[in-house]
Image 1: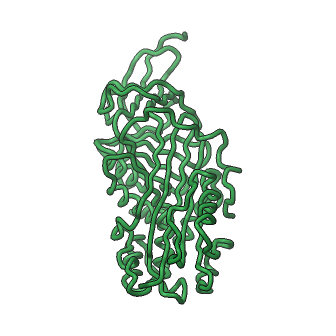
Image 2 (image 1 turned 180 degrees about the vertical axis):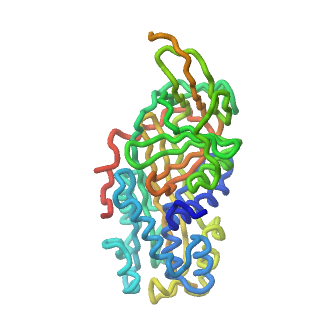
Length: 397
């Protein structure tokens, strides 16, 4: 059976899935969608073993990788909730290949000056959520390539702030800030495969967050990612007495409620910084990091090798909505009282470590993926009052 996802989206999600398998036991968040276009663009400009490794990492041929990387960023051209930008900078005295520059979006290439200018770029293209460019720029930096993603949405049905004190599960006994809401049955709760509970929290525009509860966050994330491409059974018809991690479906008497879905979870905020060179083989950077020769003749006449690669990312989920941002950068150096009634109540209590995906609804692209291993002990700062329009300074058009 063919995939319902476009090739760049499917390939980016696959990179995200592989990346999440590296999560340890702490809170974590990554943006495969922020990294994948950069690796694809580098694959198109590389030669030799570096070209082969990068193409394998992104899952498309090197000959089409550059175009695919830019195609992925264009997914958000008409999105009210998500914005993306790409930038490339070269040291004064050096020049880009003319053919390469012509393929890049207008205004996306420039001269490499100093750290402050790149910090400003990161801040501008994430609406202030990421304040520092993740890669330090020094005298040996000849070239930098970066992407920025920012996403903001408000919930169609907001949560109510409550005290969160789960009565079952690994977090039993915890007491802290929590979120609760009740909605009509709408197919937002599903069981993936045999034992992963998914709750889709719908944004007012084209961004949703998938909460994933399983035996552990890693297996839950794997199931959630597989479900986006219809690679795993998804059951939304959940009869009475259905159980799954955090999920119960019961029949009980209520007053004026009717059939409903009840969801409880802690708010969360996860910030992460990643040194991508620590997983060089995962990202196809092993050869590209070697400075004994140049690897990217498609970029410039100057022999170039990767010197650093990092990502700075955050995700925040509160009663009002969700926001996330990521800046990913790769630097290169020189080579070298109603009537009582019976109702069916589908209850989901997130009472254990869980995974989450922020998903662009139309394309199925995962913007960020992460896990929450400890419930919050303090309230998460509001995601703000405004949805995306007007909150993306410098949004590329």
